[in-house]
Length: 309
Image (cartoon, rainbow, N blue to C red):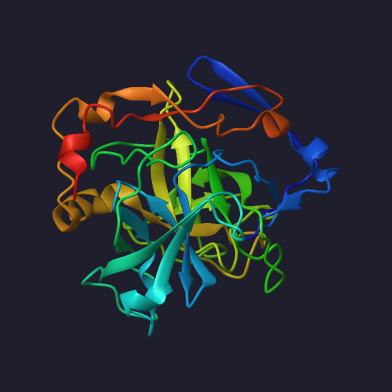
């Protein structure tokens, strides 16, 4: 993944909050990354982000959805399905990580068939549970019927390439993108009908900001009006990185919510997914948005007993 920004300033409204994004000021920063993004090196900014490493080399991103489960992209495991060769690390830096876990199980969606992009989702079970802290904890999973309006903003994070086929960073990168409707993304000049109901586009048709190589499997997240952070998409594919009319394509998480539940046995009773605590550092960081917002994410304080897998 790589993040790239243009010289624009955008006012983003979530509920009654207006966030002023000064992309122009970010472009002047030496920390520009992801393709068109910026460094997110402070521990706890994106506490659900994980690095999946094969023989201790970063291959893909992943998202923590419980004490023992990660969700990622199926294509990350092509010809590399031996769990004992994989590890997951947590924290803003690849080296040294804040936490490291070996992998117990890899579950690839039954309908995924390389080199096709459809059903690009996989689950990774850790060999030892992760104890949640303010800097490492799970993201909220949306319900199957939950909707995320198009043209709203979301955030992508990862350790992918800073340009197409370019170098990769040691510090986690972040960037802001817009959700794009599938009709637009299926236009001839964009992806010409290749976007299925299991996919979601995000980025900018003018290009400049995108995920890139090495970001695959990582999270696309967005907050609701209460700043509850939800996993909307999983970095899947695209035509190179940050090209005009070629936004990033993500696995649509709502489509696979029931599949995730079936495979992981993450059965949250009604109401538990609506319990919240303050955590993290404010995932939209003040340096990027010129505001200080404390991140609020799913609380496991009431549901811990249900998630001991």
